[in-house]
Length: 182
Image (cartoon, rainbow, N blue to C red; front, side):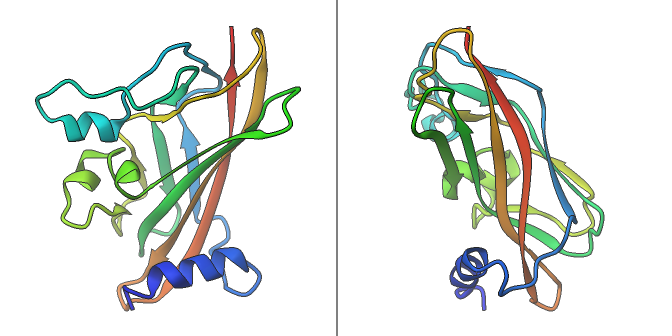
């Protein structure tokens, strides 16, 4: 069943009407109301963790914003929350394409030390845990925006909740994010 999980998750997310989804059990909260665009490069959490004792290589393009903390809150904590990926989409005024950043896999696992140091590097919120936060910032770079601009969009979390008997239920949670250029 574990090997089928990614396939089932993608099928369910693509056809959300065809698979049941926990309504409102998972809430995602970000740590700030407006994130400033920084006109420089940066090193992601993954680059930092992979560098070890060496200086990490800057892998985030100039004009980035960072979300210092993402918190996952749950009402029903009887299941393990498995986070598959996070997507940020923000429409920049005057631009035909939205800014889009996605993080999954090792990049997602690097947002929390316990996720990255685990043998599977899965982004898991254990059963019995009502609130759980990242301990490293999520970066989104290459944002081309005019000075003095403020724009809002969404941060979406895709994953599933896994019961102790192995049953899995797709989860999608979102919140609003706002960026600002100076």
